[in-house]
Length: 362
Image (tube, one colour):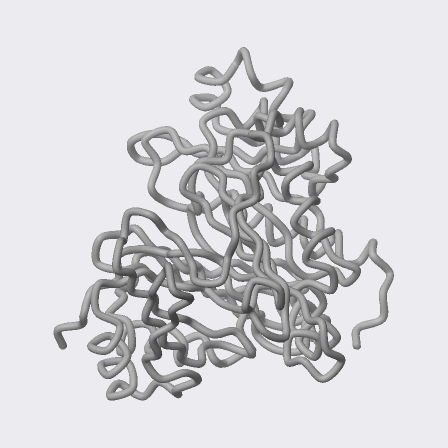
C-alpha cells in the first residue's frame, strides 16, 4: 500500500496538572526554551498551553482550567504524561483518509484552525491506550507556528544541556498486544520493522519491536511484558499508568557525560546500573573509552558496541508521582541500533527502581 508521507514528528504534547510549572521545570532542568503561550485570553478555550523548543525538539505542555476537562481527567487517571505524538505532513486529508481506510479510529476529522494570522489543518486518530496521533499541515511549513499562541520573549536559556533531537519514543503496550500495534503502525502509517529483541531474566521478560517510517526518521520502540515468576516492569508500568502509554522519550546529545553532570547538578536522579555491568563491558569498548570509563560508571551511563560504532545511554528515574514515564539521553557514535546488552540492563534497572519505589500497584 502506498501511504501518504509523514515529514517527521511535529511535537509531543504532554498533559500536566500545572502547565506553567511543568514548562518551567523542563526549562530550568532540561534546558528548553519556552517560546509561546496560549490560553483563554489568546482565544484557546478551556486550556492553557506552552510551547517549548530545544534545537529540533518541540514539546507542547497543556493543562486544564475546567474541572470537567478531558485534560484533567487524563492527568488524574494517568499522571503527567504524553497525550499526543503529532506528525507534520503536507496533506492532512490524504493521510487521514488513508489511516481511516486502514482501520484507524477517528478522533478529529481534518479541521482548519485559523486565528486571523496563523492557519493549520489538523486531524487526529486514536492510538495505543489513551494516546493519540495528530497530523498537522501548515501554510508556511518553515515557521512551525500554531494558531492562538502568543510569543513569549524570555531570555534565551543559559542552561546548556545540549539536547538535539527526539531519537525515539518507547511505548509500553498490554501483554499480548505487541503484534497488534506493530500491525497498526505498518498498516495505518506505513511503518516497517527496524529492529526486534526479546529480553528475559529469571523472574520476568520483555518483548520489543522497533517500528520506523521508511526514512528511519521516526522510531517507536514497542515493548510488552512477560511474566515468569512475577510481573514484568512493563506490566507494572501498565498497572500504574492505567493502560498502554509512552514509557519514555529519548533525546539525543553530542556529549552525554556533560549532560549527565549538568542534570545531576539540577537534582535529576538516574537509574542505578550495577557495577557488574561495567565489569563485563567488552575490552574493545573499554579501550576506546578508557579516558571516559570512570565518568561513565559514575553517571550510570550504559555503553554498547555496534557494528560500525557504539552508543551511550542513560535513563532518569520517573519524573512523576507514579513510577511510570522517564527521559532517556542517548549519544550515538556511528550507531543506529539500540544495544542488546543495554536493553537487558535497562530492563533490570527499571524493575529494581520500581521495587524500590515501594508503591502498591493500582
